[in-house]
Length: 370
Image (cartoon, rainbow, N blue to C red; front, side, top):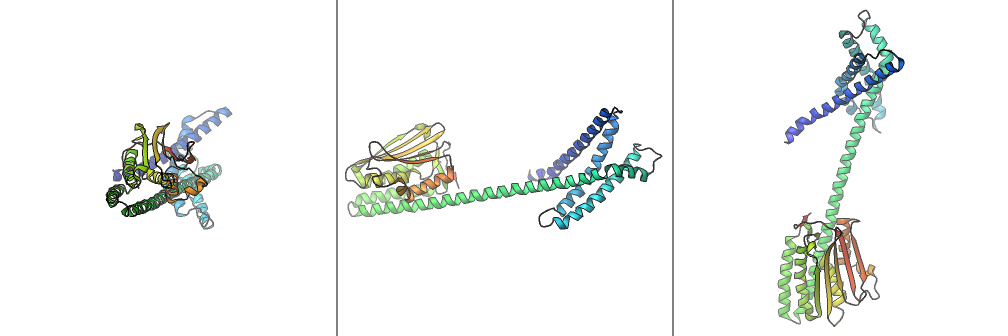
């Protein structure tokens, strides 16, 4: 298929060039006929068409040479002084050649009176058309340069877009690689604390951690997963935390079934839940609740994690955002969705803190790979 397309490309290119020269001839033929009509002279439609189409097709025959000269001697900032004289000389020679060929063929076709010599006819056309032919040569060279500049611009634009994509992917990978050790170290620290209090519970946490790491490795290359996959991972993480806090931690989930197939950033909820437990549940002795909500609203997916702890207290939202979990979450959202997302933190009226995310709804059960 590629070989066939490569073979057809030159044919398409030269078909378009031929069509362009035909339009050139028709345009000036119509202009010539209009001038005759305005002056009240005989229109001579056939004569005007044949003369201008002959002129156009002679330039079509010269076009390959002009294209080669245009690319051999480009008019660029560094080389225009050296290459411009070559184009001036080529314009003069090719214009004279085109005029000579036109006079010769027109004589063969009987378009020039037989009693006029070649040099008489050539001189007449030279006076009337030579400068026009010089401009025609210049227009071809200018068009070639314009198309080449546009092609180079598009190539640079494509390379820049590819580089931006690679940079964004690298940044996302770096952010994700920060999150995994952060989560792992925190969980191992919890297990270490529990070993001194309840060895059996610590073993259960290790088993759940093993399951979590296996799931994490399976999705190691995914920047986005279906929401139901993210919730499965989160439930495994919550089993670890509930083993640690036992009756002190209650989890409530309100999940809209219409949102389960939505694609969300991989490992997006775990740091939010970890933050809620760390700041809302861990500092106090009494029981607390973490609420996790997900809903599809007006073409978007809204995720929220809330706790009933002390809220911000004397801290500022900016201070909490400096933590690895929340700062990486915000950075990942910016990389994946740009301005098409919202990431907010607010104190709840009844006490506690709520972090919410809103991203565009895109369905799909499989993760989006890097």
